[in-house]
Image (cartoon, rainbow, N blue to C red; front, top):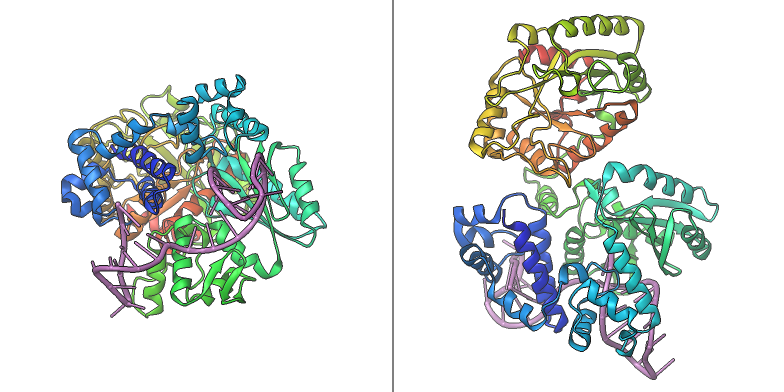
Length: 581
DNA sequence: GCCGTTTTCGGCCCGACTGTTTTCAGTCG
């Protein structure tokens, strides 16, 4: 996969052009970086399949960049990048990560003091050499030192599921202030992106100063980066940066629209406004100096001739085009996204019978409290019994007795007898016979070992599992763990075609580290007409909340209610699973 | 450097905050 290398090279080219005030090129390279960051396919594969043409078909990639990608594939380098790097050979990746340090300052530091790395930078500041440079006063030095510390603290993006509890706590606390009329968390949290880089909080208040004072004094705040009347920025102890913006009622909708993003969606909407001789900014939609919209997002979108977009799909991944098609009465418009409350049950969780922390009864009671109508207990089944305390046929028979008992004693929730069975390297269920599997209400198949097989064999392995009529769902189909384990090598086109043909269901595993399928693969499944299920993979009652994360990814993947099987009622689902075989 | 149902040339989203610049550059989102 060469994408990360191209991303690094293009980012650096962008910074170098910015150092020299080259107009427009930096933004062009930045845009291309965002596009490449959000794609899954390997640029090299795309190039090998379709040459430069296939590359320039991507948004933001034109001839110049396609040539550079080609050059990198052929020679392993990009001459223009090397030329620029030679002029200013510095560790851009880490220097630019320092808050408040941009290309101009990095250039000055290199030219005047030969600063190349974070260590160099720390050294010259501590040696008192930096104060002689223009625009490097004591405050700047202090901020840079703090920024270096922050970068070294391993600052990265945080998993959505890990950030949400704190975010909601802060949101609630601000909302309860008497000085605030409304508080909403915007940004990637509102879009429910799988990882988030910072918090963007928006508030309506007629006393912004007091709200800002309160915000900056919260116990989670480690350092105040900026504090103004309309915007404040802080670093939190957990490594997240948080921004609070206070806006007026009249501008709340446009501010929410703007700070929800993403950036490319916003650029598109602003251009569309421009095309109608309007201006869209965070204060409203303007015709000349007259504000014509801004109180609500619906109003803002309407004013520029667009429908409302659910936050989860605001990624400039075709939603604007779909809306425009819809406006012209053409097919393939915006989807009617599955709703959070459409989910009736949870189709993967574990109990004390295998590696869960709570009994079947405790899980069922907790799920009922969350409004689930049914759950599937899917304890591990495998010949490799030592793994995750997996069950054999004998123990399953005992476990079923317990499920029957709990089903009798609990009203208002149904428990399905399920299993998450390992599949071997040929896609065969490991340790449980077909004659036994058929007795379960629902069977999940998953890969837990030999995850590094070559692409063709791994794809074959999964498709073989799909062909087995006793296996209903492929659990966490790609095996990835966000920020820690790569996806297994799979030909997703073939996987989708295989699922469509066999009627196999692909799981959207809602566990924060997994979110697997991810949003883009969900989109492919939707397009292929493949059904999906959402399961929390809960190992404790606290994890049952994760269902929301899975639905969020389904929404980000443009899934509708019909695409997700656990939007069905219990009787519908049982009938559906029986027909599946 | 990219892009195009008003364009293959002439545009390119827009504003807040900081610091030390006495009028604005740099950075960020």
